[in-house]
Image (tube, rainbow, N blue to C red; front, side, top):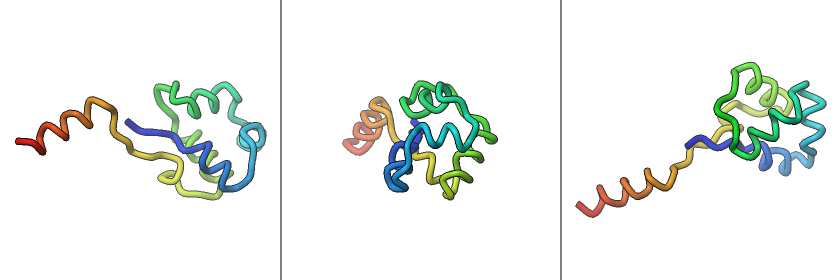
Length: 80
């Protein structure tokens, strides 16, 4: 599962969610869906705007995490 790290990046830079929406031109609704993990995807354009505005790399915005099922499968493989 890929997680969006917008909250963490905004806290590090002491910026608000509303500031990011205004600076990027990305709608508040779109950013909220990304923030809450409700989005089904993200365009490269959106990722580029967020990265440029927060002065970070795209990989800083995204984090690869494991979902619960993947964790269980991994644990079962280790036991064998």
